[in-house]
Image (cartoon, rainbow, N blue to C red; front, side):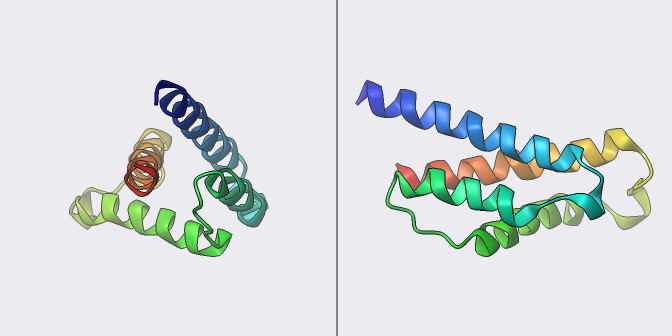
Length: 103
């Protein structure tokens, strides 16, 4: 059991790294298909056969959840700190979802 938890922790760290690396790239140059394809391959270890595009959609929904939680007049899309906050929120929720599916 301990080995499984260690493996899950490492895989979630990999997912985090993949997402942060992807989000650091200029938006129109990002290769979401490859990034979420890598994540889909990680999830296959846990018998989760997820389509990379479905994973991308799920991630986008978590990003939307962040924006829905804040009044639109408080969005500051030009503030890199605000954008990082939204990305961090979506990554956290995405990892929580993965953990729920795996455990």
